[in-house]
Length: 248
Image 1 (tube, one colour):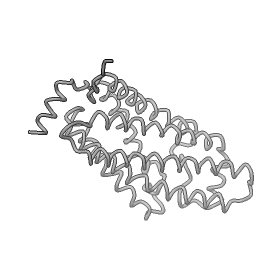
Image 2: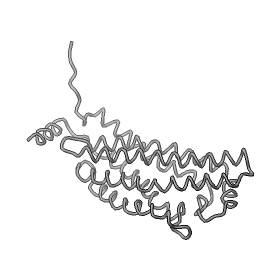
Image 3: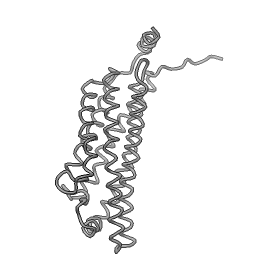
């Protein structure tokens, strides 16, 4: 019986998976923004932390369909795991830091989990209003818990961007400017965690300005996906040269 040689990480079949992961990132980001456009509440997509419990309740009561649609945003962010897996597969290789790829992968897991929790709670709020429209206190409590979870999303995004940025710059597979932009974008996302101390003004949590660095992160994912589609898979000979260089 014949035997099959193990394929190198840069084999065309693996690269096709990378391309599919790139499309997952490219398509999920715009789709996740659809509920925000449907809300018709620009620039106030969510209640503000300085709103009264009655105002928070009224906000969700007046837009139950959009609130439920936002649960789809959390589901669509699950595709970011697929995107990150493809990105890291492209960045892996002999002589490259495994620590960075592991860090980046786990950071994206945290991003997706926290995002999913955030939008699941939005859905719970909409359901609770339907079942018990008089319980304003519980609606407000769910909202404040949701904001707290949302704030922890920022440092996780920053950690992913730092890991991805450094890995991209070292791997020389994707444009270096993509890695540099990730490192630059990590700064405002990390700083946003400090907005938990802000109770009013344009920087208060879940305000439009507070959302801006996260929106830019989603744009970065689309850009990274496009760069992944344009990248070339490493050849078997190049992989062998890298392996020989590492051993030497």
